[in-house]
Amino acid sequence: MKSGGALPSPAATTRVGPLAIFLLLITGIVYSLLFPVNKIAASHGVPPFAYVFWLSLGGGATLLIACAVRRKLPKLGLKNLRVYVVGGALGVTLPMTLLVYLAPKLPSGIITMIVVITPFLTYLCALPTRLERFRILSVIGLLAALGGVLLLVLPGVSLPAPGMAQWVLLALLAPVCFAGFNVFIGLFGQAETGSLQLGTGVLLAGAILLLPVTIATGQIYAFPSAQTAGDLAILYGWLINTIRWWLVFEIIRMSGTVFLSQFAYVMVFAGFGWGALLFGDSVGIYIWAATALLILGLALDTLGRLREQRALEIV
Image: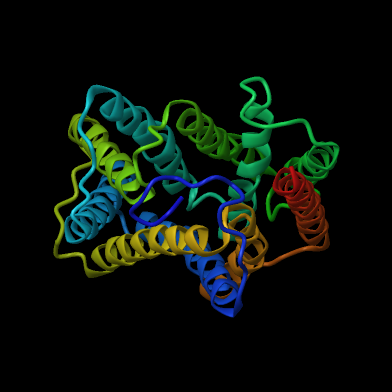
């Protein structure tokens, strides 16, 4: 994806320099901070639907301003609107609301680990649609990641409380939604739509979808309100959401999507760090073992993708 332009081919930009590496580190740290912020919002009484609505609306509005500055507004054709609406449901409304709901029930580091398996699920879902090719290293990486998830959900083994296993299983629906979003965009996203415009349309569509649900469920949260802590959580989430999208666009523009995928390494460890710093979350030996399996899986998947990309470049 090129910032503000059409989506390039995978091998179009492969240059990796100090700036790209620095931005990659910042992306992992910033994105992982969203999960403890979700927990703060939930603990201060911000309803899940209202919270995600404000984050989507704020992020979408900010990106819309960026589109206006670049004079490349999102397209509003029927096909584009379908992509925005379905993308908003799969990429924003369903998974983000679920993650906010689960934020008080699970350590933020565990939630971060669960979200990081999205690339593996995307690969698995994309194989039947031929968006991805079979790669033995990716399959081995997927099995390693699933082994890490298994260590998390075994009651009484790794989680602070055995009752958390059911919430981990429920949280797995979030990366499933994210994977569905990735595959849907890959199949039906418009090639002439730039990443900035696509992100704007998806976030604003997510906010529009959430508005009637928020009203119907009585989860209305006036922003700004008299509750300072809740308002600050919304502002932090809004800022994190916007910065994360911008960083993703810039990294892809400079160094490509394969390089971008490696921010997950930083995200896992940063997620544990934020959880320990802000909430005193403890990390046991089995969680570290699960993390090691996840990192191994990510490394194998990345290696497989790099080999495939180099082979395509040679051809």
